[in-house]
Length: 195
Image (tube, rainbow, N blue to C red; front, side):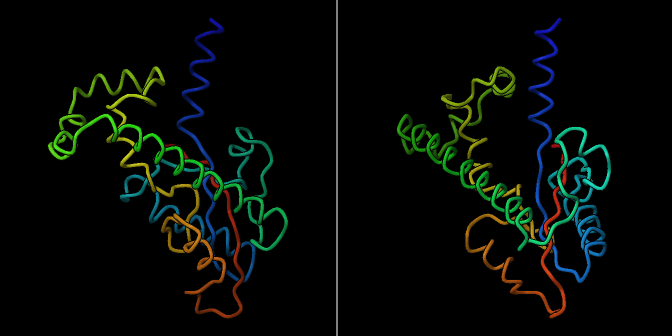
């Protein structure tokens, strides 16, 4: 019984993670409102987005799963910088891991095999079975999945719901490069998302 519970917990954690949205508004309340609007219009599944749903930390549900995170922080505050830095570290770590896996996989196959897709069009059930067992890491069926993930950038999002995928993106967003309201401030809002 305990073994089953652990498996379910691991699976649940894979389906949920925390994203950070950086938005521009004059007040904390407006920033949270803007983040919710952008999230619902651009990032939720039925609207062509990446996530099934999300819970903001002004609601007890987010805190129940992840502990107390601030619902809204200025990006230049200590807590705000930590939220942004943590999200960016995850993007970079995930990218480096995926590139490493892909480099190793590419050594295993000829250009012709890669071009024709022979290694990635294999049986879908095998992929799902390997994914469930968490044994994809060194398997060629993982190749297609890694191509999708290599720079997916789904940990940090800008004021318009666009993913922040590299240092240049993050610098541009933090400089508020495309913000026309000179009185606005940059805020970071964590969201517990389900994929």
